[in-house]
Amino acid sequence: MRTMQTTKTFLKTSIWLIAFSMLFVITSCDKIEQGAFLEDTEGKCGQDLPSFPIRKILIEDYTGHYCGNCPKAAETAESLKEIYCDHIVTIATHVGFFAATQSNADSSYAYDFTTAMGDELDTQFGISAQGLPRGMVNRTEVDNKLVLAYAAWGTGVDALVGLAPDIDIDIENSYNAATRTVTTEVESEFLNNLAGTFNVVVVITEDSIVNWQNIYPFNPVPGYPTGDVENYVHRHVLRSSFNSTWGEEIAKGDVVANTTTTKTYTMVLPDEWVEDRCSVVAYVYETSSNEVVQAEDSKVK
Image 1 (cartoon, one colour):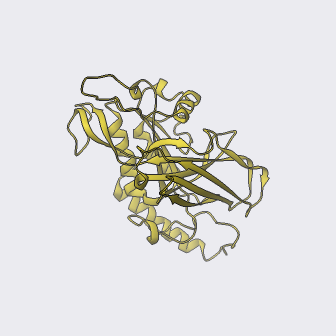
Image 2 (cartoon, one colour):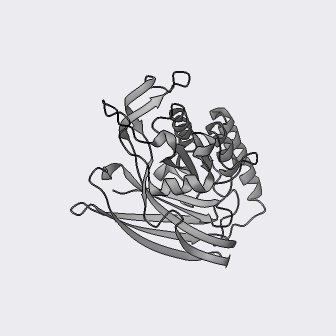
Image 3 (spheres, rainbow, N blue to C red):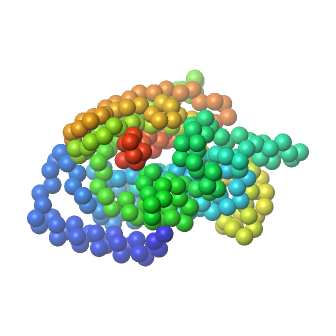
């Protein structure tokens, strides 16, 4: 993972490169050129970001509440979010042996964080079989590995964050409190010509679920004791998918720039989910490679 100082140097160097290249390049209104958004966005989020699209990177954190090393992976994802800010979208997916529920007298580890979608992804990519924690960064390889130890997540992000986006995703949510129904409209616009088959996956996550988590004494995280921790805050937890594990096709073949598709989905939130902490996450991936081309998230309300 790069240090904060390395990130600053990288971004400042990028600014000079952009200034130099602008002497020779006229940017098309219909195409986002490489490097167009590479200004110093460190520490800037939301309204402070440029108005034009940026590439967002999906970190899939595969975890389990009885995995004592997993909190350190979650801390890594949050550290990357602090560095790269709105460039990072995170989903924490509980899978495998360490995510199994337990029948303990104190009710520890009784909560079921698992999902059908998570189980399918775990089977497809063989994640928990490699030992948790593991993750993927846009489902791209680092050193010829797709499923990554958390120490490699920063390297994966660093390789992608300087690339201009090929797709822009816009999410518009509405929430009916009386029926607990969220309606989400997801628009995907191709900014450049692309070839392949592209699916959009739309899921819902819930942040800050307070429940049990094991933390190994030899791999502690700030703010928590080690051992069985009753009040651990679980971040960005995958809850369910609006449109299945593999999503819905939005484009196929030679896709020209400015191609736009809009999909609308609804879901009734179970009573135990806290709507104020729920977000809709959408990502577009190319089906033959499974590579995530763009991601986006937006709070339910």
